[in-house]
Length: 220
Length: 321
Image (cartoon, rainbow over all chains, first blue to last red; front, side):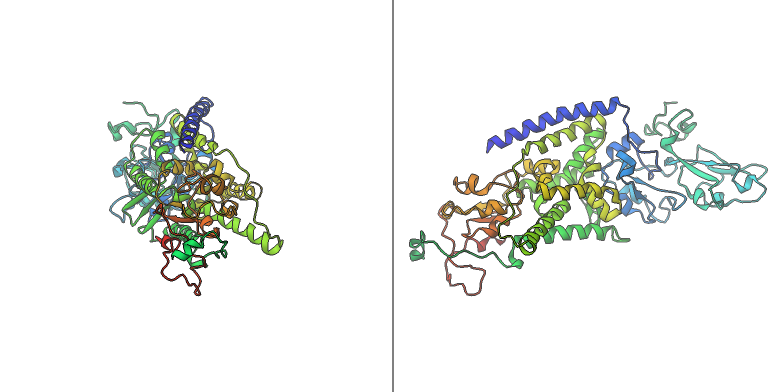
């Protein structure tokens, strides 16, 4: 039935034109319903490219040896089915007991693509000075002990108050998980939320010409 | 054998359907359940090395990637990048579909399994509880061009909006994500489709599913399909095949009565239900077509122990591969 084939291809062709129109409409209305910024697994592309490349298969979630990752549900809009993690419950352990980052190995597309350990850019730690014990007369270095880059990403000043060096902080969330205060004094801001005025300041020096920096950064 | 052929025009006793362990329905549901069980198995701790993923992408034994072809296409055009693993996995499925036809829909699709079971429940309720003797009515015909157009819409949308939309809202993925990852919000959409079944059977599969449309284009010339016995076809227009077909394919009117060699309708998902209700063994689900000079089907049920067919070649019985 050649008739069938012709009708199928005519319909598909018409559909592509309609789809381009709908896609244009979506882009013209400012790309709504993309979900809030989330903490992505290590090696994730910038948010826009990540949402384009991720096929929502969940293999990274299953491959994670620490059960850190969750899949977003439909309430996250078009980010549904993408992986994220909540550091206060379970931080990214950066597969330090394993040879490689398992989520990246599992990804069938380049949504999670291989990245040097120091170049991981999940987000940045921020310290709330009102809640942090070290700023309020107690000696506490729980976050510093948890940090994979102690003295680089988290360091102490002369008064034993803790500071974040955003050049070195990769946003794994180990500090947030270790923080003993109840509303956590140190929290990770997702990279996606930083893409606005002062986005990813000073990161270019660390990332060099890697081309795949935090989304929206200009070249140095 | 000659006398049997000479007797042929005489009406013969109806063939009963095969027992459950020889029916396509059983094996079809078995493969779908096994696939779903593998997905659940892969989500358990420590087993992700053997099998992991969901319907949009899986990996077998940590080596062989299997990717939903539509997911690979959408992701490739949306991110304008050549994703080796995903496209390799999609290629495996496409080659399989080219050779075997759109068997994914009838044999693997988890949503297809749910709709198939729903169909059986409906039939059970109708016959055993309501006590009606007639089969369910044939599904109202719908224009299946919609699903080819939807396929195009998704590809076009992915190109411009850079979003692989079908992987987000596909009820197949939503169902699997609910079972495997516990994202239950999507079940609402699946529930809508199941409720629609009772009003408009298989509307999703027949008219809307873009993945099914892709497979039906790719698997058009697939070898595994419902073959028609030219010797038996068109003798008794009982229409049981078309009445039973869950996809509403007019098998009798368009194929057996017109002397076609096989059911090539793009909506046929190779479920094999028609072969089991055909009282005269006209249809078989097989890789191999009947020879043009096919022998008549045996006059008794070859599945029963009291069959006296002797050495008569049994075209129906050869269909197991």
